[in-house]
Image: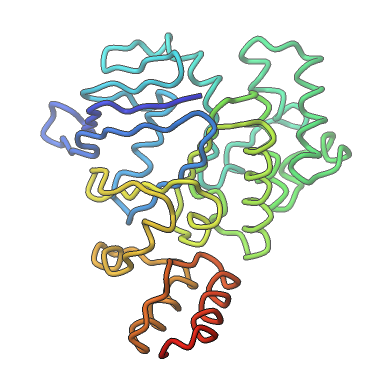
Length: 289
C-alpha cells in the first residue's frame, strides 16, 4: 500500500497559547512494499509523523494518503476506521496494550472489533502465535502470566491479526536484550517479505536502520532533512554527528580507518564482512594504507 505526505504540517494544541509546531511542510512518498526506517534525535518529529499514518493524528495542514484513503484536517474520526484496519502500529512497549483474560481473546479482539467472525479470528490467532515464535498452548494462558518478551510477541500477534497492509514499528525492540532485539527484527523482516507489507520502522538503532531498511528518512526539528538508501545516508558520518545522530559501528570503524590511514575505501560498508573484503582488496591491490 503506497503512502504519501503532501505539505503536511502538524501543531499540537493548535490555536491555543500552548501551540507547538511538530511537523513542518513534510513531503514524503513511500512506495508499496518498501521497508523504510525513520531516524532522528528525540523531539525530531518521528513519532508524530507515524501517528499520522492511521489517523491517530490528523494534519493541521496538508494531506496524508494511505492507499485509496485520504487524511485531511477536516476528516472526521469515524471515516478513518478503514485506515486503522489497514495500518497496524506496534508501539514502544506494546505489551502495555494487553488487557484481555486470555491470550486468545486478546489477539481476537482487534479483528472481531472490525467485523471478522469469531471463527476466523481464532484461526488467525492460532496461525500468528506460531509466526511470532510462541506455541499454541500459550493461547489459553493469561497474558499477564507470561514473560515480558512473550507479552510483547502476543501484542504483536494482535496487531498482525488485523491483516494490515502497512505495519508501523515505533522502537519495537526497546528494553530487549541484544538476542531478543535481533529475533524481533528478523521476525518483522520475514513477515515484511512474506506478506509484501509496507513497513515503517522508527528507531534509534542505526544498525537496524542499516541492516533492514531499503531507504532511510532523517527527521530534524519537525522537518524531513534527508532521504536515501542506507549506504548514501551513512556515507557522510560527519553530517549525522553534527545533528546528534550516530552511525552503525561498522561505519564508524570505516570512518576511523579512513581518517587515520588517509585511504578512502570505494564504498560505505554496512557489514563487517563487506568492510573486511574492502580492506583486503585494497591491500591486495597494493594501495598505500
